[in-house]
Length: 221
Image (cartoon, rainbow, N blue to C red):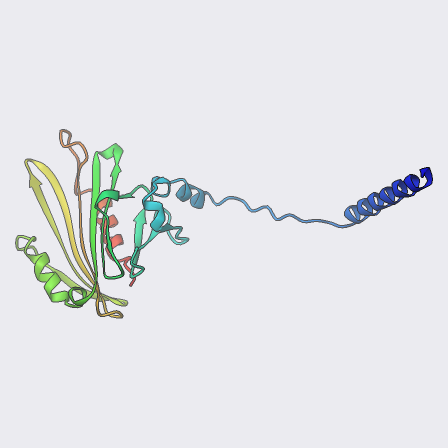
């Protein structure tokens, strides 16, 4: 019996010795990747930490302060600012035919609030870009509409500076119509104004126009 125990102990010892030799003789390389600061910042952004917004968002390797928003209809994508959130209680989705999204974010040091809403149509309304443009024109107070084609989309855009009770509004309007998918269009509206209406703000800040133009031209159907 003692002999059997000694043999087992010897076999276990031999196994451990062989394992140690094999591990010691092999060079094991573990690739340690440096964390991309830009990626880490986006992953920890307000947008990615919001329970509703994060469902639509993914990282965009080509952008510093923007993520990619993929519609719940899967019919379009757009850029989405890292500090913005989707308004949960107003969001609407009807199969792959219609989506309503409201987005807000603040530039706190400058008392600026930026608001955006899109209505996505994938039906006879989306196909009739002229109808959507005429509807947009009713809100423009005669402001000029710029029409142009870029890549796979047709754009109708306008800008309006306005004041309500002394509070400035910098408004952006757009109809984005897909030339590739004829039934798909987005009716877009956005504005910048004072987050705290009791304080002043510069609604015409250059960052505002840059932001909204960037969003408008980021739509991919």
